[in-house]
Length: 179
Image (cartoon, rainbow, N blue to C red):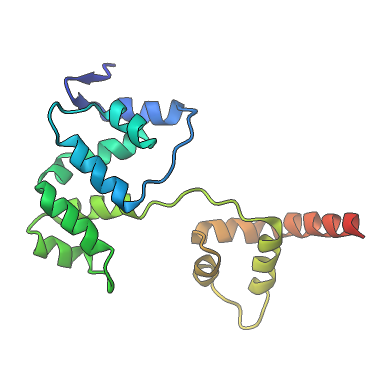
């Protein structure tokens, strides 16, 4: 499998590099995403690896921001404005942005997906216990409501509640050690 020909890069190579990587990466703030897009369009054109190293982010993130056909359909100025518009309040719908920038829904969706990615979040044990206690209140909040309160995905809330006996036992053990 070839890594890249010129500046084109294979999707499988990117995914393989991301999955096999041991480097730690940060989530890019909005301003860095805009700068990364601008840097990708300068001459001479930098490689995905160069941009990944410069911005300390995943190769896949650089690839999705700069080298996908859907994303390239918009000129740089429109990309920047679309990103800024997506952050405004009230946030416009994907369809509204698609109409405003005269582009495919898929293009807008791929841009917004990149902007809304979350980092992995490990909830401390005391917060897990608090979440479990809240789930046992009446009226019982939904997993979606708990996810919003604790800034988690609903599936994560489901997994925590599924393993609540384990977390409550850990909490009891910790409390016993403190006494």
